[in-house]
Structure formats: C-alpha cells, structure tokens
Image (tube, rainbow, N blue to C red; front, top):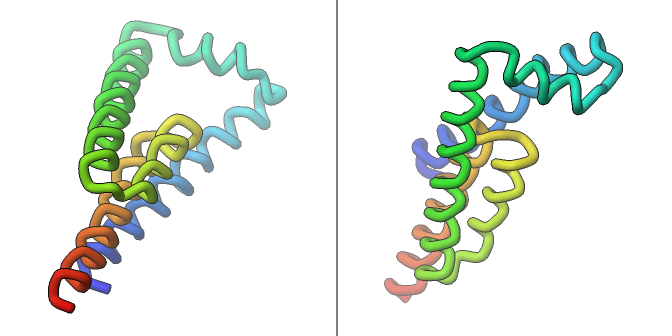
Length: 113
C-alpha cells in the first residue's frame, strides 16, 4: 500500500476516534440527550458558524463522492457518505480518499494486464 493511502487511512481512524471521544464524553455528562446536543451546537454565534461550516462541507463532500462514484463506478467510495453524516467530515473525507486510491490502484492494475 502506498504511503499516501496509509496516511488517508490513519487520518480516517483519527477523524473517527478523536471527535468521538469528545462526543461520548459530552453525552455521558448530559444524559445522552440528542436535543441538548443540538442546543449546544447553537449555544452562540461561534458554534453555529462551525456547525454550518461543517454542514456545507459535508454536503459538498457528498456531492463530490456521488459524482466521482458514478463517473468511475467506484461504489465502495459511497461508504464515505454514511461515515460523513454518522461520524463527521473528519472521517468521511480521508475515508473517501483512501477508498478512491484503492479504486485507482485497481484500475491501473487492470489496464496493465
């Protein structure tokens, strides 16, 4: 596996574990309340701005993943969409880059055969 693909995979794992630590810590302190989490996201202008920044990034990533997956036939790349919305952009983007690299490598192998 090329070093860049290992980096994408490591970043996807980090992008899962690090945010989840903070989310689980927060949820444990707040009785696992989804509504309280949504309220916390909009506690002030700074957090609202961050929520909207990540929402727009997630939508853009989803459009890109769909477009690329349809164009290339790399259906494995679609796993990045639930990863983005269930975990976060910090997991979905590097996961897609990892999966995209796998498809590109398989394409190069089949072209050289």
